[in-house]
Length: 629
Image 1 (cartoon, one colour):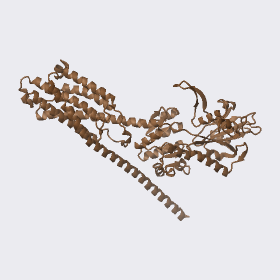
Image 2 (spheres, rainbow, N blue to C red):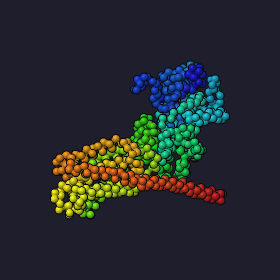
Image 3 (cartoon, rainbow, N blue to C red):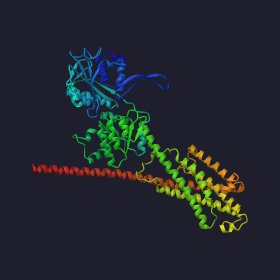
Image 4 (cartoon, one colour):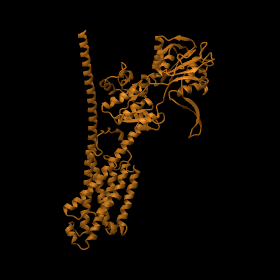
C-alpha cells in the first residue's frame, strides 16, 4: 500500500508501531560528504532499518518510541530467534490514534519481533485487517507460513510482530535474581500476531561476480545465516552461491538437521553433510563453530566471517577469521585475523587475488635473481675450466648485482597480477615457493644467458686480443690489460642489456614478452635506472677505467654492435624456453586438479565408510536389544 493508504489502515499502523517499539535503530538526518545534501540515514541493525523507514512513511515521527517508555528489553538471541520489549501503556485506550484498541486497565504492552515460525508458536490469536481479533488455529498458522514462504522465495527477510497486553508485569520486578530466560518465558505467553514485516537487503554491487570469481579460483563459498531456509536459498541463488542447476534439497539445509535430537551429529555424520552443503539456514553461533571444525577435518583451509560476540569462537577456530569492520563488535575483531573495513564480500575475493599476486611476484623475483646468478656462476666457471681470462672482476660482479640486477628484480616483486591468476588452483599449504618447473626454468634461462654472453665474450677476445682467446696467450700480448678491458667491456654491456631484456621476459612464466609489455610502470623505472648506471659505469672517466676497469669509449662501433648480440639472442632463446615452461605449468595445474579431486573423493569415501560402519553398529545394537527383549 502507499503511505497515504497505510495511514488509514488500523492493522498496518498497529503492526508498524508495535515493531518500532521493539527496535533500537534510529533514523536521523546527515549531510552527504560528497554532495553536501541532507539525507535520512538509519543507525543500528540492518534488519530494523526498513521498519523504522516504513513507520516514518506512514506518518509516525522519528521520536514516536519515546512516547511509550520502555520498561523491559530482552535482546535478540540466536536460540530464542526473537527480541522482546515491554512498553508502558498507562492511560491509553488504543495503541495509537487509529490503531488497535487496548483492553481496559492495560498498563503494559509486550512486543515480540523475530522469526515467524518461532513467534507463531506463542500466539493464540491474530489481529485481522478490520481490527477484529481471531483465534490462531492450525489452519491460520499454516496460511501465515505459506505467506512467509511466498515472500522468502523472493529473497525477502520476513519478521513476525506479536503483542500482549498486561495489567501488571507477569513476574516480580523486584527480584534481582530472576533470570532473563524466566522473564522471557513469563512475558511471551498468549501473544497476538499483529503482522508480518518483509524487507530485502539488496545484493551489493559486484558480489555475484565475486562469488563466481571465487569459485573459479577453487574457493568453495558457503553461506551460514540465521535467515529462514527459503529466504537463504533465494539469496544464495541471487548471489550465485547456488547455481541454477543445483538442487536446493541437497545443497541447502536448516541447521536443525545438524542437531536432530538437540545433540550434534557424530563427526562422520557432520562431515557427510558439510562436504556438499553450501547453504546453512537458521544457524546458531555454535553451529558455525561445528561447521568450521567439520570442514577442517576434511582438510579444507577455512575463512569465516562474523560480526557478533557469539561468532568469536568460530572466528578463532577458522584458519582465517574475518571480522566486519563497520558492524562487527570489538570481541569479534579481537578474535579475527583480518578485519573488513567495508563489510563487503568483494573485498575478500580482492584480498585473495592480491595475495596471489604478491606471492606470484615473490616467485618471479626469486626466479629472475636466481637465473641471473646461475648465469654469473656458469660464465665464471666456464672461463676458469676452459682457460679463458675471467670474464669480469669481483668489483664488476658486485656492481652488476647491486646496481643493474637489483632494481629490475624489485620491480618484478611489484608486478601487477595476471588476469588469469584467480583461475589457478589453490596451492597446497606445504608447497615450496620455488617449484620444480621453476627450477627447470631458472637453469634453462641461466644457461641461455651464459651461452649468449660467452659467445659475445669469445668474439670480443678474438677481435681485441689479436685473435687470441686463451689466458696464457693473451698475457704475452703487448698492452694486454687494455685489450682485455675492451673485451670485458663488450661482455659487460652485453650482459646488462641481456639481463634487462631477461627482466621483461620474466614478467610472465608462460606469456610472450609483448603481452602487456608496458604494464608494470616500476619495471620501466628500474630499467631506466639500470641503463643510466650502465653508461656511467662504462663512459665516465676515472670511475669506468680506473675503478671498474671498463672502457666504453675505446671499444668502438664494433664493440657496441657486438654487445647487441646478447640481448637479441637472449630474447629469442628465453622466449623459446617459455614453451617448455608453459607445458610444465599446465601439467602442474592438472596435477593439482587431480590431487584436489582425489582428496575430495577420499574424504567423501571415508565419510561414507564411517557412516556405513556407524549404521551397522546401530543395527547390531538394535538387534541385540530385540533379542534380549
